[in-house]
Length: 208
Image (tube, rainbow, N blue to C red):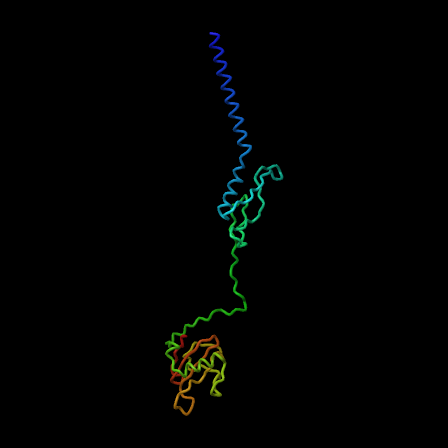
């Protein structure tokens, strides 16, 4: 009976020692492991940039709160490009870069929209003399006739209505004609070109 009591006491003592040992090991592991929040932030930054990021220090903030704080320092992208990743914060995670909206300058004219419903003619299909006239228009002369460059009044109203002085006319030389002939190029202020070979009876818009 006495031997049985001694054995039981030894088993109890051994069990207590095991429990105490497990508790000490668990406490040592918690003391040496980094905080979970720091490990997550460091892992996310490493996955994004390709290199480890210094871990943020965790300390109580003013007022007694024990939440983690982190310095808003950008991390450099691997490869030497000099670009930086968005700042990682403890409250919002990865902050997306801000894209500034494109602002049109007030001095920039709006794009010209031509909707004249006129027939068209390719620049390649123009007669050689019409191509030469357009070349002179592009380089601002010199022109063969004194009337070249005068304002075209659009009295027939076949072209889109525009303010006075918007259109100017230029002669297309007609071989064998004793005068300016019936062919003209009409140039608009926005760069549009119209060709007539019947002295303003009809127009075709030139497509370059």
